Length: 105
Image 1 (cartoon, one colour):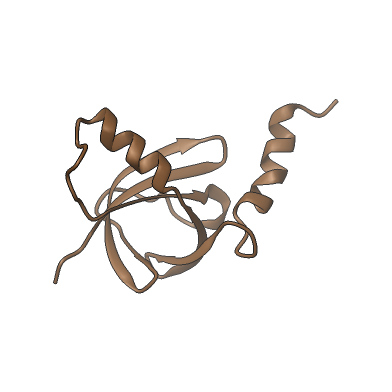
Image 2: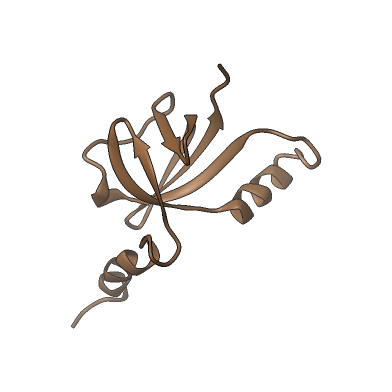
């Protein structure tokens, strides 16, 4: 009998789909689909007492199977033409949740 987890993994392709929620990003020279999550980022900033502070941060989700490497802090990611430096990576049920800060020239 299939487990709920099996259904979840098959649904990742729907969630991380450029025709639905995702956008294209380049992480360490690999083109992948990511889902930007501004709500989760705002929630984290509130929990860190950063309300009202303007930081150039980005939080997104990417499928683990779409990457050929494990993303780590200090990896670079290009999203919508902007360069970001990864500051945090969390792993959850087939997804990486990645937080990054904008790289200033």
